[in-house]
Length: 317
Image 1 (tube, one colour):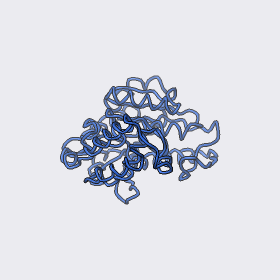
Image 2 (spheres, one colour):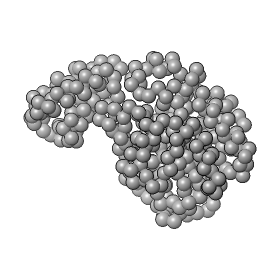
Image 3 (cartoon, helix red, strand yellow):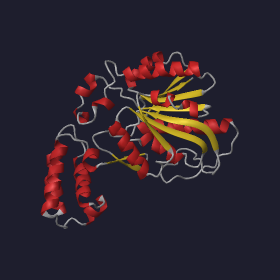
Image 4 (cartoon, one colour):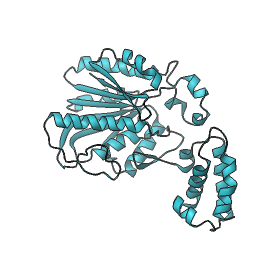
């Protein structure tokens, strides 16, 4: 069977709801089987597959028709222009989460500017949406912790984007040992495994045990916690293969944000001189409730995603 024949055979099999990317999926899966870029497939339609390759491809196509995410089949997902290893132990990174990364970077830039430090904007190979910290020695003096890190895509991206800044400390916490294993693997993949300290535990609790060993003035917390309700999960067949621990946020989806609020209130009382900024991803319907949960904060701002929906809450303490 040739590449062209394999693709033509696969296309109709993948044209089932809610899959709306049959052609792309077929090409990505064949690209993974052959270990060749998609462009190579299209340029070599007459190339023949071996029997083993054909069997493997048919197996992947069958799994995809059962709504298994492409990332779990190829073991890879791009986030913020970088490839990340993904398997069933972690949630598949979503494009909308990149908005939260942008918010953190924007606030880092504002923090630097407030001190009067000079920035040197550069053209990143990944994005030119924000000035980048290009000058070696630029100092931000802050601690960034990723709560519920999962694949580690958020904290690793921040460590890469802020790689030239001094006095930055990076932490990543997760209650799942499997998720932490994936995050550590991705940190090694991107060369930041020495920069990030991975901690196992519930939300901020594992960090509290270590905080006495660090002088923290500015504390940035990023949290993409489970925020779906059981009903939303039930109604979304595309996510049924993903870990429920990373999706289910309780009756109204905000169970873990309430727990985080309790921890932050206690932290704020114990360390009143530490500046805290929280960035969390939410469902567009949760804006009013998230403001109520963090009503004890100095300020709660809701940022919209590219589709104009409420997506990121920025909370200042």
